Image (cartoon, rainbow, N blue to C red; front, side):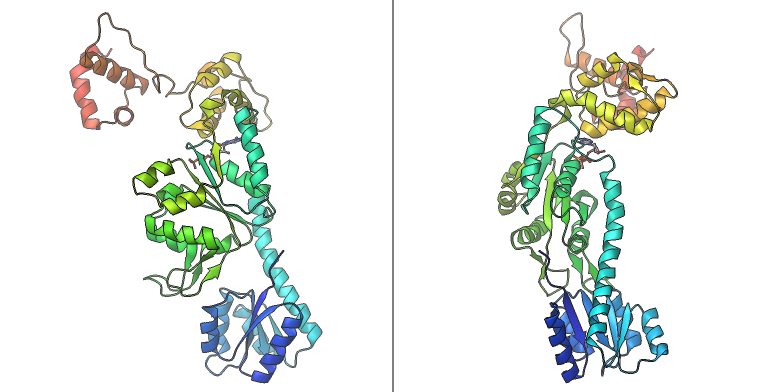
Length: 446
Ligand SMILES: Nc1ncnc2c1ncn2[C@@H]1O[C@H](COP(=O)(O)OP(=O)(O)OP(=O)(O)O)[C@@H](O)[C@H]1O
């Protein structure tokens, strides 16, 4: 069910304004009237119109000033008592979408409003359609494992509801794919899915990006800006890495999730969002609550529906299927297949970077294989394959700590082809220390 569209009528002629708002109400619109620019500005702090009807002659402003300012944020139709072509052209140039000449016929009013609202809607959905097409290509949840089938049925159950969902899972395990599946299987699928990654935004930027800000809210806020919540109106907002959000912003999120309301930064009016929220994290939020880094009320609110995107090593039966999927994606019509031992190698690996890492490895394998039809084991070998989680060394006597350090250091250095920076990163030491250890054990390098 869609809410009625809100129309703001700005006209200083009281009788005309009353008549117009009454007629618009009869047509099923929600209407508000303002007698002056000052009144309209105050009104816009309270309501969020879908369309503005603006009289050309107001006591406290000119169309040259008012039209561009309003048209930057809202669809505007100008009402003119002096229907000259010249003034009509100038207001259209200034950003108004249409104009109506007084006295206005009811039929013309109805048609013009419907057309302008439809156009605004169409512009939104055209941009949306392009993005959806891009998102659908290659999204979809691939896998036949029990874990994926269970996840699929949970997605089917929760998708049609408006429940806020928390997706938990390691990096690269497909949390964003799950979020997109929920959106695609909901009634909101023809509206926007807006994604925000909390790790990429500072605390203040997060607040203004998400909630928007009013003109003058802070230095540099030279005009009002709608936030991503408003961009997601009618659709879904996916907030990735909620564990990285500051405590102050967590409080704002709690209010948003509980009441569906929010305020722009520097704003006084409470706005209502018709948005479905999905959040994700790779962190243990329960632990963060105990450490005082995550609000317990927000945690409990999010705990009502939790989906887990399982790590790839816990569903090894999906590895071959995913590998085939990525192979056909990267080959683009060219025929290629995996040698049996290549698949064995892929299946045995622990995939700390999950599906994303697998995708990268297949992409590299296709490049390395060049024109060869068969992807061999050496095409898919991962540099991190050895020693990523299990180490095995053999010594002629029980090793000392120093023996272990020497063996592990030299093996890591070799694994990265002598690259000191990568060795330092893998061992969690400084490059200076890598040099020191080469000095210490280097005589053994061949
Ligand atoms: N089940 C799946 N089927 C097909 N592709 C998948 C699947 N899971 C993940 N992918 C692909 O793996 C890559 C990583 O997935 P995604 O971005 O959803 O992971 P994530 O858990 O959100 O990662 P991060 O926590 O780093 O944001 C993407 O290219 C995605 O398309």
